[in-house]
Image 1 (cartoon, rainbow, N blue to C red):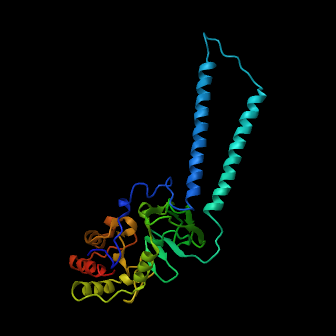
Image 2: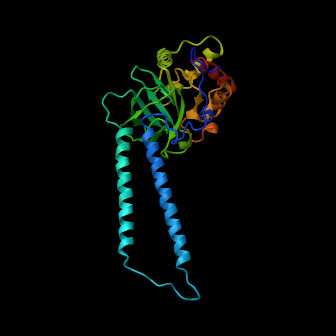
Image 3: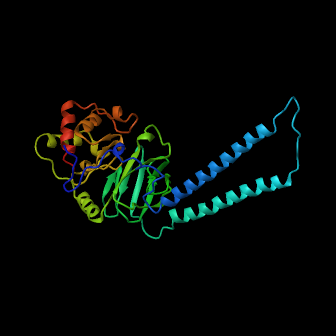
Length: 325
């Protein structure tokens, strides 16, 4: 099982991303850049304040220390100092307020059209829906350079969608969809995560945004629209029977094969993805085998039940799922 779709290259696991690919200090989008800029300004301002306060305290400790048992003279009512330490903080707060308003305007412009993507947070994975009918999980393909309006929803508890280089943080709140903008200036892979504690496996609710050239994105989208083919004879065919017999289709969808579950990741094109379990592991034969053998050993507390499958059934399922490209 190679995990490679025809004409598409397998994506790396999240931990294999280039250094800085999840850093808010290296924005790759016009919606993330204003936030990074404001963050940097705020850090500088706070550093200057911290240094100034530290120096003032140090000076006071030295200049006004007790000498030969004589306490320093106490002074009150310095109008000049009172004006300075009132006016300067007000000016700093007002300046940051103005910069914050500008940042909000640039990073979160008004939504003026129907969403280009719908992302739904689940415990503990991300569902991704495209207007054309494509449904994926945990890996979001986008055309590079295109501003995308994203509708964010939650299927259970509060999650928080955050791809630091591409967009602002946004909460996914049950029953209250939110909209935000996202884009990638250049093609590449950008890591993200859930930034709101949402349960046992919050730390492994990762995601990957894969920005592609328009022709590559269109090719990926066309491939994703194709239904799954009937499995070849042998282990793969037995694997599909096991998938049916164990009621896996009650949770998972495999388009074209009669499995239409909606509460777990769509598996129609599982092998076009590079990760399993929302980034907890790579999508390799060995990792998929370990996942099916005991999902809770890979991702403790996950909602994938352990069916205590025999080794033969696990091997058959791996053969079947390995053909879903």
